[in-house]
Length: 361
Ligand code: PEP
Ligand code: MN
Image (cartoon, rainbow, N blue to C red; front, side, top):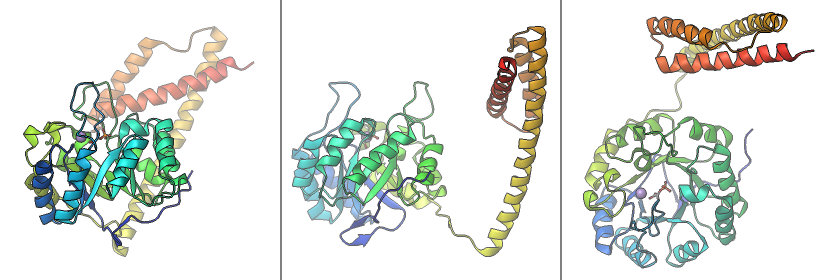
């Protein structure tokens, strides 16, 4: 279901930013010099929005927790010296008041905060009657409704210049990424709130510099609206998130390599695509029919097991089945991961059908 959210395009100084919006700047403000040394080359590259964390939500105590309000004065210097807009994270009402007092242009709600409805509601209430763009990061846990809920709370307080930031999701498993992108979640967000701009945060997804380009390009290929990339004049010496920050020049290299494809396509391409999509629709139709047939057979097995008093799950059969499907799939160029997921899910559905049959009077 589409969520009803009242939105206005994000307009800063009267100009509506064209896609892709690029926000850049350090993870944390560390000193006035560091901010200016980072901001100046960014402004020269044409970047309009400067990011820096003033209050840092660190996972463990005793890590660098940000310079606090003093850094807001440095942000004002950046505004004056470069003409850029400045953006920072707020995590509570005090942060909101301080950020507004010092003329911050854009605020964002961090991933740990958007996971907490009480905190988001407090921030929303403190923003009533204020006209400032607010960006809402996805919550740390992969819950699209919680993300939408945070956006709705801010919107219900009268904030209409809203965007989402996709920064990936925590996972206990060691993966390639610091926060797994789980692209299906921002895609679902787009489906539910089609007009809401989505900005991807490759820095917090990757946790290192290596994959920043790939994630940025993928966001562009999904027609997302912008990127927020942590940029520092001396990344290796950064007081937070050193491994994932790039120099302004490193950022330029990423941006220059980005390929922006057209979401609107011409009629001939449309027709070819429509034809191919039609083939896909027909194939999916066949898949569904085959699955229906397969479930019918499962139900027959269920009846047989019921009549003969045998349990549903026989693990040996499942292991053998999976082996043959993996072999077959392998020969047809289907990945092991896909075959396992597919047949687990088919098997689960079969068990459900069999249970229904066995539990019928
Ligand atoms: C940040 O942007 O520096 C930050 C702390 O991000 P997140 O809330 O995504 O962890
Ligand atoms: Mn950071």
